[in-house]
Image 1 (tube, helix red, strand yellow):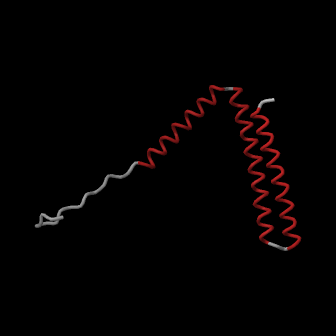
Image 2 (spheres, helix red, strand yellow):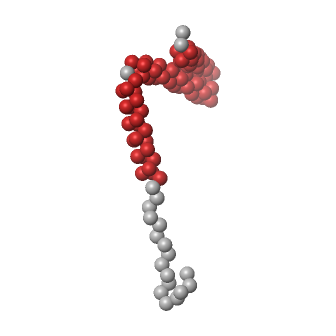
Image 3 (cartoon, one colour):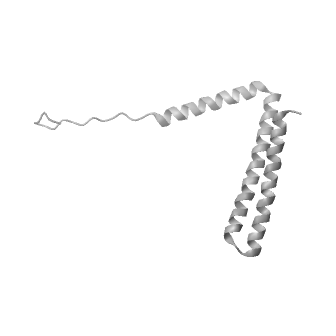
Length: 108
């Protein structure tokens, strides 16, 4: 078994456990009418769902990369070019305007 697949499965199971724990905590918060517990339960549930989504996405990307490596390389190059263009545009500073001399006086 591939270590990457095992790692993905572990992350997916961990996400499922987090999701279930969040639902239990949310239900306990509703039962006890504690908004703090309920909010923490919802946050934990969303964290579990995000972890599951991450595991699923990495598995899909890994499978697609193995199936067609040249396409994956082209996509990575395109994203790199796009991010580089955005970075260059965001970091280009406008030209600085220098202070003008006062008229009739040589001091600044």
